[in-house]
Image 1 (cartoon, one colour):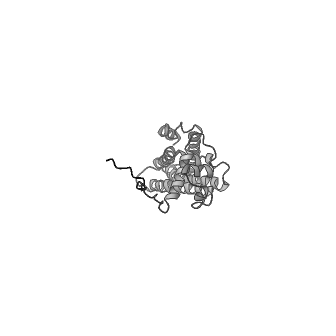
Image 2 (cartoon, rainbow, N blue to C red; image 1 turned 90 degrees about the vertical axis):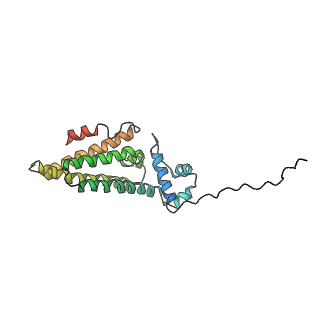
Length: 209
């Protein structure tokens, strides 16, 4: 005799969805925003598009960030917290030629942008169009801070070279290097990330320094 099938099969037990740990959802939001910025030809990103990518509501985003500007602020924090400690290490390196230190700071910035195209769009200002003006001011301050570090290296280099006006020479050289960095980042972004910012970098720096 064949047993009749069970009319009431046991319910399938599904593992409960894991709740994100404190800070984890915030990091996911920032990672998603950076990834969206990496898309070639990406237009202005809306919170609706960001929420859709994360499969959450816009209200869920606002539980972690009061505005989209705060999301960009957090990405700028990441840029600063990554780049400036490393540039400070370069400056503190003993027994290294000052001109070599300046070259390494430039390379540090451009390599960072090459590895993080979405963040390069922020530094280029491309991602901040129609966003809060304060964000562009923060980007400007990042470059001003790097220029100050470069002046510090290049003034020492000018003194070693016997320059009669090491401060003025350092200001000119640092200004040229920062303009070069900004131009390379802009070109990287506007070429849809095809023209790498570190292309022929050693030769360029040797020519300028």
